[in-house]
Amino acid sequence: MRLKNKVIIITGSCTGIGKAIAIGCVAEGACVVIHGLEKDLGETVIAELGTGKAVLHIEEITTAGAPQRLVELALKTFGRLDAVVNNAAMVVSSNLHTTDLVFLRRVLEVNTVAPYALIQAALPHLSKAHGCVLNIGSVNAYSGEPNLMAYSISKGALMTMTRNLGDTLFREQSVRVNQINPGWVLTETEIIRKRDHGLADDWYKDIPRVYAPAGRILLPAEIAAAAIYWLADESGPVSGQVVDIEQYPFIGRNPPKDTTTINTPL
Image (cartoon, rainbow, N blue to C red; front, side, top):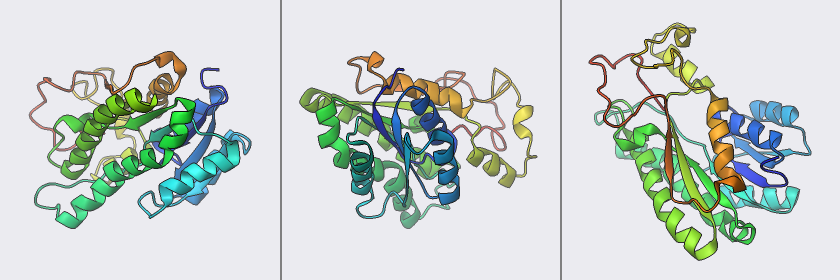
């Protein structure tokens, strides 16, 4: 049991990567706060995990006081808080011509400011537990795709925040802050996005190896396996680190000429 008796808040955990991380954490002995916007999906996750191991909070993460309420729920239900996983995010297509300032600010609020606010709210309790923060970023943080501009900007900012807080908070309060940057992952959201792009529902079964050398893309459970390492004590004193989880080197790889239809790692 690598996470025995730990209490972990996981934002955006009603579906996708967040849900997979929650399942993995409970399997390793943790109790979790499930968070998201989809009450029916969240209740399904709770039923799968068990009410003694998980509690549900449905609220928009940028609502005033939402971070504090998540922390209070963890303390009220389980009596402590050991870790925060900032996973909730807006994954939205946009470019310079379609992104006005209102839209850009909204993406930044959800993807960058909300994680910062949750870290602030949780910090006194994480410090007491010598706990940790795990931010879920994206390989797009390094430069991003033309049609994921606002999203990529927000993840770049999150990565800088991770490195900054990973240094200062560990030295000052013994709280580790790290980040994993998933590549292209087969989540429910990604299936829907590709359907909206005009691809067949089974598009992921036949992906050219130039986009996925393994012949398939990553699964949420594989991201969860990496997350558990960073949440567990076995990752030791490592802090301020960002680890890419993809099947090819994202930086320096020569992309194919035609990337308009299918090459959209998250």
